[in-house]
Image 1 (cartoon, helix red, strand yellow):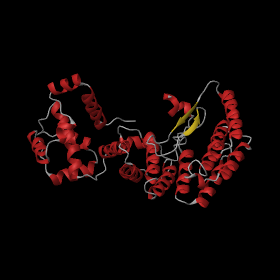
Image 2: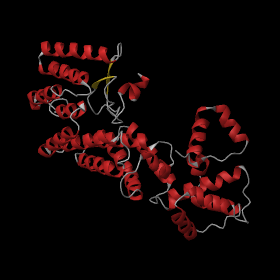
Image 3: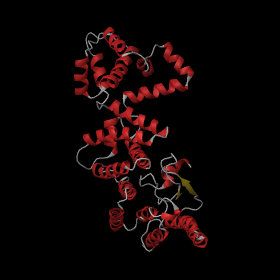
Image 4: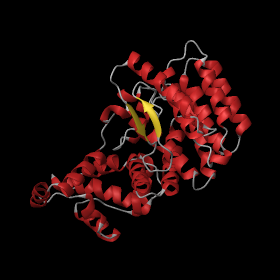
Amino acid sequence: MKISRKTICDLVESKVREDPAYAAAMKKDNRWLQVNVAVMDTEAIIEKLRSFGVPFGRAQFEKDLRGMESADRLSTQWARLPTCTAKETDDDFLFLAAMELRKRLLPDLITPEALDDWMQEGYRLSKEGKPIEAARVWLKVWRAIQSRMTGTGHTTAEADDLVRGTQCVFNWCQDFQIELCNAGLKDPAFFRECAEYCRAFVETFSGEGDLLPGFRRYEVEARFAMGEREQAEGMFESLIREDRSDAWNYILWADQYWLKGGAQAHRDFARAEAIYLRALEEPRLDDTTAVHERLAEMYREWGKPDLAERHEMLAEEGAEDKDPGEPVFSITRGGGGEEEGLKVNRNAPCTCGSGKKFKKCCGRSR
């Protein structure tokens, strides 16, 4: 993953905010920061560029930036002009000015700097509990990435080379899926966006093997949420035919009938039970422990404590056989309280969809 000049600037800005001594040193050295340029009005930025020998004109700026699609490339070209007098720390101003003017004069132009800005804006909105706003911003990022990665067989590492941002695409693409689901809880139209995104992701990033099973299941879950139950059931059946050993194809299908089924009166415990038990009939199932765990949880909700205890014992026995002493954790997808917590054994596939075991992925910090 290539680190962009903008990412370096973001890291510097972060350290300035957190470390007073570092901030004082930057000020003493007259170093330019994004915050310094951001408070300048547009004409002041332009006049400062001209004072450094950059013959700035709005029409030429727009033409050059559209052609180069990068504030970094454009500022590098400015620095090489025979008339440019910017040296050392002033060279930073050229780049920061190009970024700031892109935001103001060409806000919709897609550049690596813009993609990183939009990614970070989405994370900020998500943290503020605004999933719809976050999803809308991230849809711009996704459409920009998709428009530049035609065909199939791509990997997220290739997308990293396009974005060159603070966040790696491998992580962001999963966060985006979760945010679309969270937005769907407030506006069901986003469930369709989620389904379409997951399908397009699988087609575009077919070289990203570890992520694909999770994204295929996420599409089906979104279609359940949209009310396309018959189609979604057929899609889960197809996933099982392709890989009968994958316990999570059964688990997430059964989950739709009780764990994500809304009010108690609308849950179909019997249907969920049938799918979980069907999974246990598969001799090559890769994670019987996870199925027993989910059955135990479901039976508790269903008011069948004896069956719940039985499957809890079976789950514990299975966990001990696989990895003695490994505990079971309760996690919540998305971290925003929008979805119910799911009990996940450390040997189970991580619910983030990475394809890795929980203990080697999100469970590392537990």
